[in-house]
Image 1 (cartoon, rainbow over the protein chains, first blue to last red):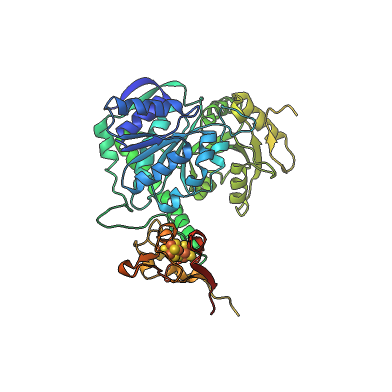
Image 2 (image 1 turned 90 degrees about the vertical axis):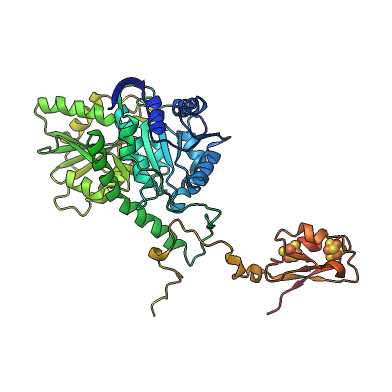
Length: 389
Length: 98
Ligand code: SF4
Ligand code: SF4
């Protein structure tokens, strides 16, 4: 039976890694990820988790070690944030093509400059096209559940890809929440032992990490993309199995009160919980508003998102990352591209907010809904909510 | 005319993770990258072994009783390190002619 405990979300994520019985954790501490790996090092040192904890000298080495240990057949976990993810960058792009199912928790934090330790999504967005499966958690329970699901998804022999679990830094990572921690027997029913698809084995040697000349580079990239796109079906299957074992239902795209909604807000991560309360309040005041949240960011759940937005007249897309030099944020761009060929294409508005830890409140969503309903034409460029310009 | 596709293997036929059997250079002789080759003047050679130890590709073979070192030109890349390090200037890098 699961047990409900009051626990800091970072520690709960570490407990989930323990429940998953990870073999290797290679990590370098960085705010606000620190508590996750600090607790894991305690669990290993105290003999509660039988794993190798590799205290590396940098995030580049952390991800290198993780790719190597995963290729050697070890269930592998690491965590980082912001500049740490940036320092991993070179290896981040290698793990998917080598098909090493490393699990990475990202306590999302703004990228420098200016230096800022607080929450937004600029870190993960900087590597969104690297080939990782990307999951977003809304609250502490989801952070735990997505961590467990990530092992199941990434290690599936059909998938064999790395997975990032995105947890808003501080907003989630440092809060104490009531969380249902599953017991080991339940986790064992959900998560089979890791059977690697590729394995460095002295008895049957293979070469890993090869050069691809012009005659095969394109094909190697395409093979990785094919695997990533095909992984969506396994993500859905894993969520179904998660529900069967733990009783909590997850979908790649979550919809809230969208049935007759004229304006639908699209968001990711913890702000969606705030948005849902604002939606309730606006609904009470008679406004036809709804909310769609992406749990799965890569592979991009295009069909599911298009279906969720099919009845909307206006779509307000929230980005927590500013793409410099172009007119939309990353989610805004994807949604616009998705809906370009849609029948009865809705108007799409893009808003950037909550950068570098700036608070996102219910008022922001009311403000966005008001901006959309008062707008006569189309929006040509994203608007920043709450900027002093 | 339609441009032929340069690919040597279908994406779907690649091994998962772009792995390969090790030892592929047994069949694939990498020495054809070379534009210059080391040519030894055995008169000058004192059998010191610098070429053998400095060669980054490890292609020199110790000829033992014959007291010289022979580069395996199937794999020598023509980098010239051996010629540079030879204390007797016994090795001359010579242009490959086709
Ligand atoms: S030229 Fe370079 S690769 Fe060739 S034998 Fe000399 S040191 Fe080795
Ligand atoms: S370095 Fe020069 S002298 Fe020494 S063994 Fe090689 S060729 Fe002979």
